[in-house]
Amino acid sequence: MKIALIGASGFIGSALLDEALARGHEVKALVTRPERLAARDGLSVEKSDALDTAALTEQLRGAEVVLSAFSGHAQADVYGYYLKGFDAILAATQAAGVPRLLVVGGAASLEVAPGQLLLDAPGFPDAYRATAEGAKAALERLRAQQTQAWTMLSPAAEIFPGERSGEFRLGGDGLLSDAEGQSRISVQDYAVAMLDELETPRHPDQRFSVAY
Image (cartoon, rainbow, N blue to C red; front, side, top):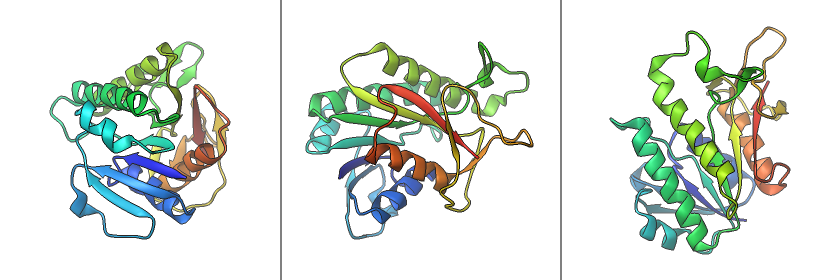
């Protein structure tokens, strides 16, 4: 499958890139610093500005699916930058006529109790609030529109470098936890869940979640 992967050199993006290439997909990596990615079979790399809708539209043409791991973590205005980028990605995906958009979501918009989001729970770290609010707003934007087919995958509360086990649970809008009350997933297994969805869509126009 021809995949346009935005943010392919980031923490989650690089795991998605590894998993996609291992499965034999053709990946166009759209990144701000192409020098970070070494040449690999099945991979083409282009310098890209996610906030430039017109240029991004041309880069997305011909893709069968857009996979967005776009992040604003390194910016001064994390929330504003992320939403500008997300809006541009959504508009460019539509303008380029790409059938599907898959988006890396956050855990903070998952419910920890009926009607209560992790984002609003006592003790939620301020350092992650802007990122969490951006991902929540992106989900609301996707749900509000009806022109672009989409899926968002939210990870567990803790996502970390680990191993690819291929064994995990999928959920919906509730935060998944294990028997010890921990909500965890390796970035490698997150990538497995996302590529499974890419290859065999089971959550069209929905957000779903993954955890051990």
